Image 1: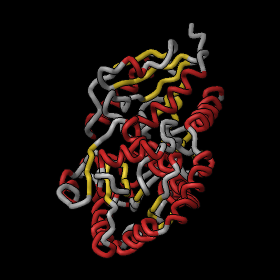
Image 2 (image 1 turned 90 degrees about the horizontal axis):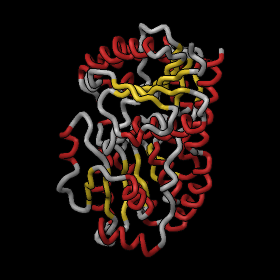
Image 3 (image 1 turned 135 degrees about the vertical axis):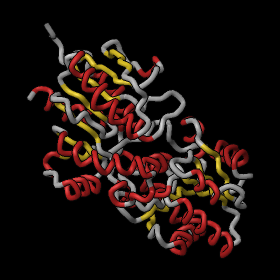
Length: 375
């Protein structure tokens, strides 16, 4: 007879050396939850062989469910057959899915995090098969869930309106950022800039190379900024291509634009802290963790003014219309030429960053899971 509560967590994005947004969110939140609650038995559902460093404590049982879920057809098979069977086999009381996907045919209580529904607003940015899957299933996931977590008030309002979900069923829990992000000494800043930008100050972009991240306009705005100012500033773009490899064609080979590819977290933290400003102008974003990373480092921000970004960056950024290349360029001019503005934004960012913590996110997430576990 079962004596301890059992919670299963979808951990398919915990991938050693390949962690992106969903993976880091899963890592930061679930690690804190399982370590803080030894009285609960947790079952981690992987879709392939896993790294044992992701088994955070003795109360975690790893379960591999085939097939690897990396295509819409396999998504369906994994969640509707594999996950459903595993939930029943292991007598699970509640299933938590940090990437929003649920098992529609299971009767087990389910809670998910829907970070945003960008695919509903810009479906053309996503390959056909993925677009069809997401737009067909996510309204169903939202209705199926016993409760929905999301990462900004913008996303809460958007999900509620688009899917006709009662707002009382949706809770906002802001993301955090790693504590490794912090200001650097002047000597280290000089060292990093010497290595990556020939000693010049630089704007930095961090994130995937994906259409909604608006890289093409960012690059065009930077080129215009350089032409109109003759500034020595450079642009570093840190990220990995997703969906459209052609997006890289707008980056590589451009003068004073450095494409680093994906960086390990420790090196990324140094690159961000040595930047003169973050330039982050997606036209759709559910949260924007790079904003928090920059604020923790005291780096001023040029941000797009759409969706959730003003909610997150607050008074630590200046804003521009991400669809207007001239306005993005003008923002770059303001930041590069105004040291007192940069100092003001830096101070505001460090203060505002205190609102964003993975400890807080994990605690609030657990409160919601615990409420549904006991009811």
